[in-house]
Length: 125
Image (tube, rainbow, N blue to C red):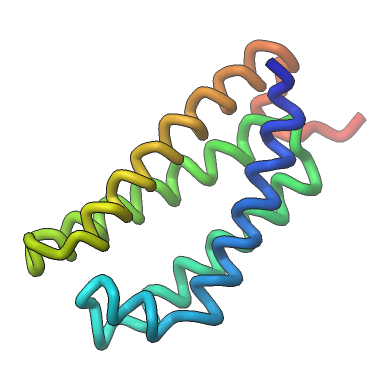
């Protein structure tokens, strides 16, 4: 597998997802029955964009992908709270499933990068 290419792709994906969270905050909040939590969604969008920029700058370092794993944990926590508040909301359950899938991919890529490049953290050459 080409983990560096996957790391770069995750960076592009993070930037796109972050842009959606920043530009469609109200629509996302409404779909998730999370009206009043727009600032949180914008914060998640900004975090996602920063993670993406980090991956574009250093796609072969596992630490950038591990930042996404930490973000996935935050997303899962917030979505779990949303699921508790609106247990019949299909959008919430769909978002939870999507984030679980993304988290699995992130862990696989981070482990693969660490194994193939031995660069968990960016190091000046």
